[in-house]
Image (cartoon, rainbow, N blue to C red; front, top):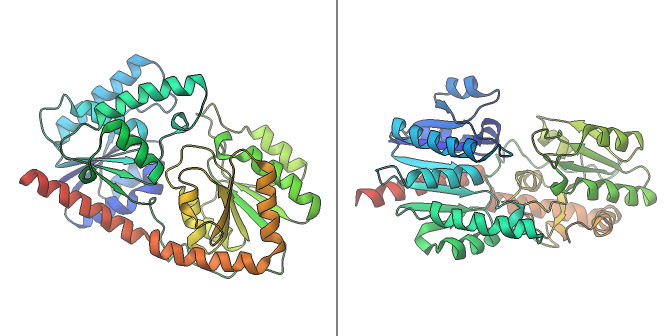
Length: 379
């Protein structure tokens, strides 16, 4: 059995899909990863995976370049001759679906929708036009006979079910990519020390970084010693990235403590009291909120599709309206002022993570999807 992953970039694959690929390898699949590679190609090859370059451009570089990417995907499919294809994120799903229209084989197709992006939630004229175009592409790309579309939240499921006329048998809901509950373990927080709030993400404007900094300013007006940690790096390939000089300014003003890129997120969360993600991005279910729940930390996030799916409102965290720094600050102040509530939310968050976000459960669900699709084709 040959499993072909088509993913936009290698680091995303490692952070979000590697456990599934490892389990598939252990189960007897020959696994190929087709992606744009940065620094992890050799590492993935050493793990036993076949690796093939696909020139995904994250920001788009013209129609001819995008068409070339689709042609490359078609060529990869014809060369690998996979038994099943698993495409992850917007471009790989759309482009693979289009490439499959001209491949003369009925190949089972797993399309992982890890967030629909801003165009399905924004109200600007440009976003509405882009939504119409994207909807047309999704309708064509998801027209495969043997497919399973994996959604991370019910909002995305409702939208694409309508757009692509999906049947119940064609789709499933898996909340996020899971977390290793042994690595992201629950440690009681220090309720007597300095309050630490942490935001960890790609530093994009749509992730709510500006609102987080503004909320920090408000909270520090009442709790000057509260520390607001910012984890992540600017995404230089994204036009909506936060700039380094902005971060430097916030640090100079004493609003945030900047930690940059960190590989020890479990330790960062263990030494914090509250995890915050005020995103209005088109999220699936943010991995950082899954990890925060696993670590038993109270969460403050937005009532945004995906974000709200990572919490039980009022029990494991608090949701606030998007782009509302004052509401964000109010929620943080509430958790600072009520440590018993904060600790109780953290404990319930861990239980919620054990039920919903265990990576082993997520991996097993994916292997079941593969098996079901393959048996459907055999019939």
